[in-house]
Image 1 (cartoon, rainbow, N blue to C red):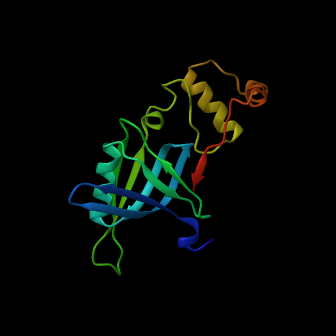
Image 2: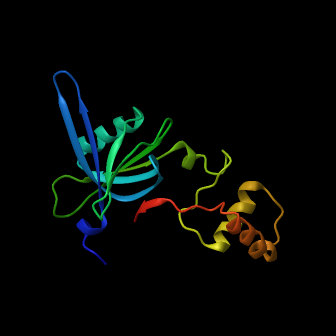
Image 3: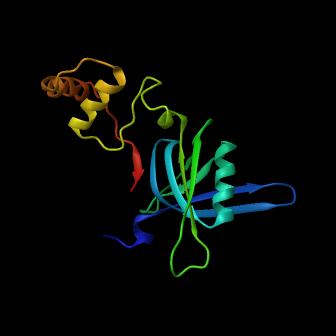
Length: 163
């Protein structure tokens, strides 16, 4: 297992108004997305940083995501993103660490907009998801053949990710 600073990314948010300039950076332990579209962000930081990131998500802001290998790209969660916040109390810290999980509308309504996002692709899970979301009567013995056709037609695509 790598040290945290080697496996976590950074999420940067910058906003400037006439009188105030804000720059926030928080650690990213989970990310799932494609091109400029983020589907899942899991970040942690202090109370004010997480509050600002939450507000920025609801304002449909663009963030700078830096991957553990040092590459960066601009990402946004889009409209109607959902945010879930929590706290992690550590014995050696006076204040708890704040945690935020933000999910895009596509991930939140997974399977309802004509596409399905799987966090990991394993054939048995993909078959169960396909049958469940599509409401198809599916015999488990059909799984290999159907998934071979889906894979051959390149209907399954890898997404960018951290963690």
